[in-house]
Image 1 (tube, rainbow, N blue to C red):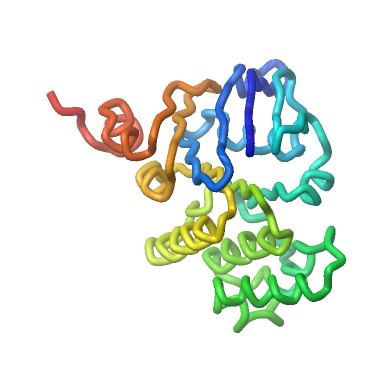
Image 2 (cartoon, one colour):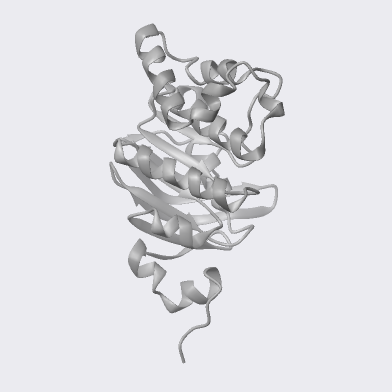
Length: 238
């Protein structure tokens, strides 16, 4: 579904991503974990066309999409739920969800997907006429995911979905992530909560200072001494 080859991204004189390689197979949930400033969010932006890479290639479904504008990629089934949610605060919940389907013209399909989103997030249905800016942080995260789902994505990129949320809301968000994956949507998950990310994923990559330093099955990474010490807050066994 997605192949990243020697991807590099620079901001001015800063090399934020330094020639990384990884892949996501169709139907997988893959976690990309690492500390703040590791280059995870920059990587997602380069994949979805919000940042132009300095080098390397991004292949999606076998086609080179490096540097393609994001609006084209949305039409091809690639969607991003950005860090910070990026909702339209002055629009209602319903209007935000409608914006997620802006590239579509199949009215019946859009209506069906709206009901699907409301089934995933009943709270959004209850607040469909409410201004999005008045929602709680967790409700805004639900809305950001729901808006992305309205584009009927084949590959969904999630950037820090648990950031700033209470534990109960985090549990709800990850429950929905699992349900979306069960429906066959391929997911690339960037998440600082390494344990939650790996528990929800099939495979994982560890990013540090702009480089991929580890990649393995998620279950193996959960038991890797380096990962446990650096990202799970556990001391390595002596």
